[in-house]
Length: 314
Image 1 (cartoon, rainbow, N blue to C red):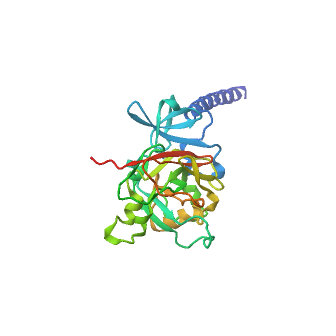
Image 2: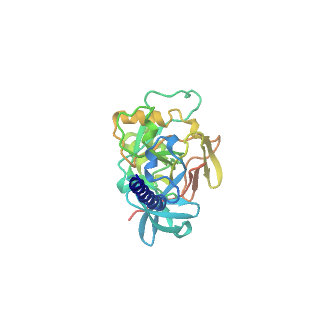
Image 3: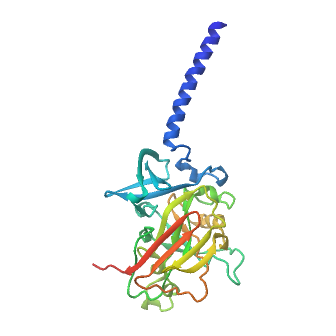
């Protein structure tokens, strides 16, 4: 019996030692208690902390990382396949933050027109009015927004952007949020005269009215572990408040949008959904001019700040 007790004690000691080593590795890999990158695919109630995933440029190279205050902790691997911390940290001031999604690896950027409450539009609609942007529309949180001379009615549209975290098809509203990786800030720049297509072939099409290069700045981070409802959304034009609302203003909320779209289209990790802009304050200018600076801020998510410039032509 003494021999058996000794063997049990030795086994327990060995197991405890292995567990301790595992905890140390886990603490290093998860960066002292931060949730791993798979947390974007969990139900919101399972997420233990807010995490901010960023993509950034440093010395001619591009990296992913976790932004923690003024420090970025570098990650290795794909953003949607549980990348691991490398142990390298950099200061936020040492890098340039890029769009948190790599346009070359995004399959779809879609948006919803007229999806915020206004007189006569209070209840969810059976078929949200979808439109498409392009992955090349994605722009950095501080990137310049190009305006061609024929764009006479380029408008800002500050809104919440949903980032999909795993493959989704025929998703129920009840399960929809489990397919969300996180949320970010977006400005759905739109040429709203072109969007109407009232002049036919004499003006660019609706597709181009939303999908031009640079017309979808997002960032500065993809935020997980945050409740998307009730977040204030504000847009400023040259420092003046021009849009003021909250994410509660959405006519069709995020679960409805994901469920509806996934009925017709397969959503993939990294797909971005612009959920609809908030109201413009009375008598505020919407038509952009070269030199204008537009800021969109969503509380808890951050800000994108973009300057309007003339379209670059070789």
